[in-house]
Amino acid sequence: MTSRPSRPSRPSRLFQRSLAALLCAQLLLSACSATEIAPGTARWPTSAPQPEPPSFPSQQWPSPVVARTAPNFEAPSATHCARPVQTFETPGRVAGQRDEAPAAGGYGAARSSLAREERARRMAPGEASADAAAAMPAPASPPPSAAKEALPAEAEAAPRFAPPAPSPQPSQRPRPVQEIVTAGMVDDNADFSTYLQFRQRTQVAHRERDVSERYLLQVRNRRGDPVPDAEVAVQAAGGAAMWARTDAAGRAWLHPRAFDPSGSAVYEVAVRKNGQQGTTFLRRGQKSAVELVVDETAAPQRARLDLVFLIDATGSMGDEIGKLKASLRSIANEVARLPSRPDTCFGLVAYRDRGDEFLVRRHDFTNDLGAFQSVLDALQANAGGDYPEAMNEALHETVHRLSWRGTGATRMVVLLADAPPHLDYGGPQYDEDMMVALGKGIKVFSVGASGLDKQGEYIQRQIAQYTGGRFVFLTYREARSPASGPGRETVHDVSNYSVQTLDRLIVRLVSEELAKLPKAG
Image (cartoon, rainbow, N blue to C red; front, side):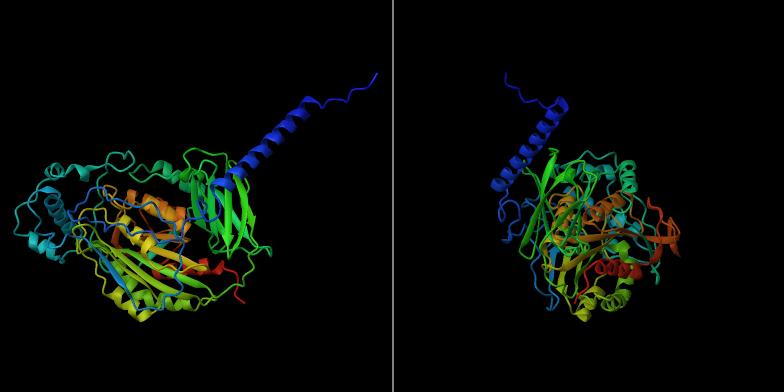
C-alpha cells in the first residue's frame, strides 16, 4: 500500500492562494504598465510645445466658456535668465471699449456700474480713481437685481460644483500705507489633520479636489541623499495619472483621490532623474511612506532659485505692493547671502480683472535686479470692481508661460492677494493649474492680504497645500482692523503661528527651501 503525501492544512492553503493572487495581480499590473504606459509615451508628458490657448477675453468679452487645451505638463526647460525684462500683457478690455463708458445694456454695462460702486467703497478716503471721477455725474447705477437680469446666459454658466448660497462680501476697509507689514504662517501639510478639519467646517464655493487621502513619496540615491527635482509619474492600471517633481528634500505628497475617481487599489510610481529611472508601487491604505532609490549620482551644483511674485494689482492692494517695492532689494540681498549662494531669477505676474486696463501683465524671468525693481516700481494698485479677481488666468500664465529653468532649480511663487478668483468665468481654473504646478515642481506660497474672505482663504490654502507650499496671512494689532497697525492678530481660521515682518518671512521661506538641498562640492 503506497502512502499518500499529506495535504497542507486549510489555513496554509488559504495563505498560498492569497499570495498567488497578489503575485498575479502585480504581474498583471506590470504587464499593463509595459503595454499602456511605456516610457516616453503615456507615462511621461510630452515635451513637445503645445499651442497657446487663446487670450482669455474673446473679441466679444465677456466671453462664454473659452476653449482650453488639456493641462500641459511640459517639463521646465529654460537654461538661464540672463535676459532683459520681457513683458507680455493680456488686455482686460476689447479694443475701443472703456470701462466707464460701456456699450448700452448687457453684462458690460451692469458690471461696469457695479464695479464703480464697489471700487469707490474700497478706496481710502481722499482717493479717487479715474473711473470713479467719470462716474460722478452719471445716473444712479441699477440695483443688483437689475444687473443680474442683464447677464447673458453664457455668463451665468455654473462652474463644476454646487456652491452654497453666496455669503455677503466682506467690506474692504480703508488702510493707511504701512511701513511695517507683519504676517503669520501655517504649514497645512505639517499639520494635516487640522487642515482637514478646516476644510470640513468651511463651506464655500470652490473647485473640488479630494486630498483627504495622501501618501508621502521619498526619493533617495544609493548614498542615502535626497534626490531633488526628480520627475514623478503615478498611474493606475485604468489610466488615471498624476505627475509631480520632488522638492529640495526629495519628497512629494501624492493624493490619489484628487486625480483617480475610480479608486484603484494599486498605483505604479515611476521616478526619473538625469537619465536614471526607478519604479515601485503605492498600495492604498499603506501606512509607511513610499520609498524609492534611484541611481542618480550627479554631483550637487550651485543652487538655482526661480522666484515669482504673483500679485493682485487691484485698488485695495496698495500698501502690500508698496511694502514689496520698498523691501525687494533687501529680500534679494539676504537671499544672495544664504549659505547656498543661489543663482536667482526674478519674475513678476500682476493681474486685475475683465474691464480693467489689463487682465494679466507678466514679466518673464530676469537676473537683472535693477531692471526687475523698475518694473515692480511701475506697478500701481488700481481698478478692480467686484470682489473676485482674475487669479485663475494669472496662475495659468505663471505656471505655463514663464521661462522656468529645467532640472535642478527650486521654483517658488509668492501669491499675494486679498480676493478669490472668479469661478463664474470660462477659461483656466486654479485646481487644474495647481496640479500642473506640482508636475513642474512649482511651490506656491499663498499670502492672504487684509480683506480676504473665507472663500479666498480656502482657495489660497488649497493651492498652497497641494503644491507643497504654505499659507501666509497678514496680521494686525486688532484682527478686524487693518488700520490698527502691525500686530499678531488675524481673522483667519489658524492657530499656533509665529509672526514676522512680511519681507523677513519671505526670506525665511526661501532659506528653508534651499537649506534642504544637498551641499554643493
